[in-house]
Length: 61
Image 1: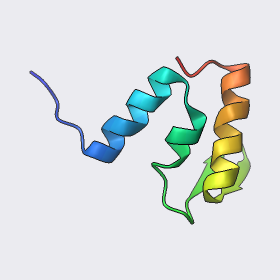
Image 2: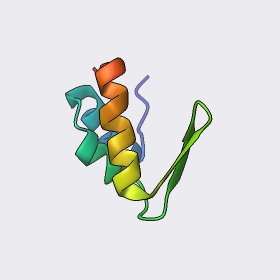
Image 3: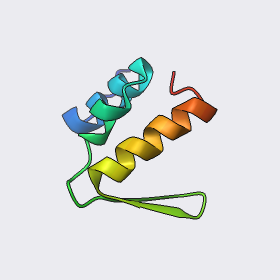
Image 4: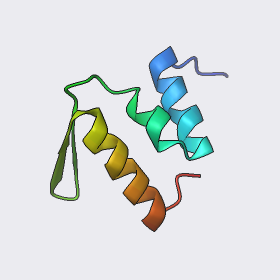
């Protein structure tokens, strides 16, 4: 059985497999907020930086 993901979710995972933090952040709304390990990241720029830093510690692939 194949699961059909919504396009935005599919794009997120495709970009995650590529390790592309900039493209991943574009899947979020401009005013999105991510809370991870007690830290809050507001907006695409902060989310992009969070993803880039996270991939340094834990590769996205």
